[in-house]
Image (cartoon, rainbow, N blue to C red):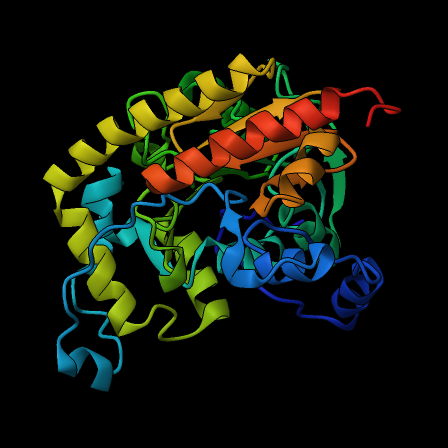
Amino acid sequence: MADSHSPGFTCGAGTSEAAAALTIAAPVGAAIRHGGNLHEAAQLYRIPYEQWLDLSTGINPHGYPVPPVPADVWRRLPDEGDGFAACAARYYGAPDAAHVLPVAGSQAAIRALPACLPRARVGIATLTYGEYAPAFERAGHEVASLDMSSHALPESLTHGVVVNPNNPTAERQDAATLLHWHAQLSARGGTLIVDEAFADAMPSASGSLAAHTHRDGLIVLRSPGKFFGLAGVRSGFVLATPATLSALRGALGAWTVSGPARHAVKAAFADEAWQRDMRVRLDAESARLVALLGAHGFATRGTPLFAWTADARAAALHHALARRGIWTRLFEPSGSVRFGLPANAHEWTRFEDSLRDAVRDMDAPANSF
């Protein structure tokens, strides 16, 4: 078995056997659900698209005010010498630019990385970001449930994936625990992938491993889309050793992040005053969201960008709100629902009123008129 951190670390199927494994492992007809699917909601509940309030994602509704894009940025090919990777290394605290690879959203890396790792057994939490397990299965790996409370990982695991803080449960692992897991997997020739997409809103509590990405077998994914509200630019970063990034770069090809996206993200990373003010604002708004849900009897966990509840009434609440044009993210079959933040006073009022009415109707006796 080739060591994923050695010169043999490559991406893509290189043999007919590998190609066959990819074909066999591909899931059949299983669509991966995400938030933000308002057109689907509009069709399902017969409410016009423009009348919906979308709380189904954990994207900051107060997006960064991107400065005007210079005309030449639209005309020129993206320039790898523009300091984009170095800017990200400074912002995230990576060792240097050589340990940062810009990608077209972390989604691109999630799809490509499994084919770069030796096929083995990978541990992934049962309820987490839904793209990981299918991506590893397509690449011929065996996916097993990862117990996030475990100190020692099972000997059968070679790779592991941890979303920290987790989406949607908001569980957090401290850096010491993650490094301990990494040491166990690395000793087996394996890799720990840590997805820190929601860490920007809570840097002091996130347990980020960005500074440790000089270590073999550790890969960290970051995304400016959530905290900065820039999901539409499709920009993300892979933090890892230069050898790992070289193989991934070869798989993804040139110009993975557009010029306008690079312009927007560099401006956001440089604006420290906006970042400080936004973290204060999000803390206050997430506390308001938690208090509102708690007042109706829903216990929650969350990050500054979303609240999550595992409640017997979760599915009923999701559908009751949807009938009122409020779209949340339902996780089935776990019986849980995630709420993003309203964007302004009007949206807060609408959500508060709709939540009150939805809970009232859910609690009404079935034979009441």
